[in-house]
Image 1 (cartoon, rainbow over the protein chains, first blue to last red):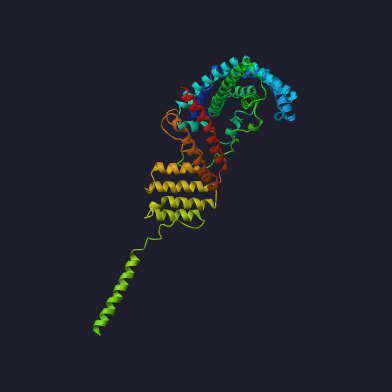
Image 2 (spheres, chains in turn green, purple):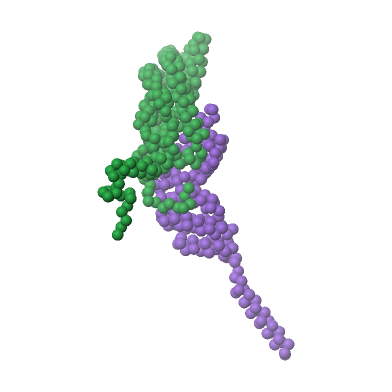
Length: 281
Length: 181
């Protein structure tokens, strides 16, 4: 004769429906879930989320203003190369082309100059708020071991490959598109995706660092170009410094096709029934 | 004549005694040679026998040879055999529990023993960030051996590989944030 289980919810002689409901509720919260084992990261409070969204829209405005002038710059540069002007300094046609190139370059700098303060402020705000969260949550709030446990997220196999974002690196797409993707990832996430959030937060933060650096370099270049304009010097040819700034702006705003590589391939599904050693950490 | 007989008898007795002495005390010169062959179970058994005797100082060589043998017949069950061998090594007093764990996890776990410590990342990991990452890269090679070449567990190896890449990214950001304080 079997002893009726106290916890048999289907037993009509046992618990009353209300008690059964309460018990089910208690059991639901008593059983440690996967998410409960992984500490929840507070990397993206509403303020940070809003900063990211704002930075994305500022980047979009800047892109739309610069797209036309940068494409013109590319065409002019190509024309100079096709016309072999690098070897014909005295040619009046080439001189004209070089002058146009210099003017377009200045135009690009002017557009950037008018957009930069807003962009710089948005980037700086996001960067600082993310730095604070990263320092608090991952830097001071975790040991190296808990960090890797969090990155693994207690997930394995199919679940991990489904929930992890497919990272693109920091230069694979337009800045505004990247922020749009970041915003979607962050705003649609649940707390159980803490591991992914650590990676996304790091990715955005490093993005902000690079963007800040580019803004600083661009502002220096604007100052230098303005000074040269004041000294009434024309831009005879595009200098390596100018080229670097143009490429930097293009790379960070419009993406670098050569860098369109994911940061890592998604993990292959692991067998959850695999052997667990008593020595496993 | 009698003296000659006595001498011969004495010489025979000495020879017999010498040979008998060799039989009771086997020479150990060849005992500490790690096992040969391709059968991991046999090799583990021989290793345990040797290591529990006078060859404990050769533990690393024996472990290395067992790994070589396991590589010649990779399968998921090998992971368990090494776990059992390391547990035995701990029980036999050859390794501390911590050493056994460290070896097992270095080769057969996704997580990195190179990334451990009791203090927070800002104070412990960031000051030696590059050293930690270099150690993790070396550990990934060992994981490749343990997980792929010995256990044929490519899924776990790829997770370990991804964990290293994510750790690199997250540490770069976190340590920059720590130093920006």
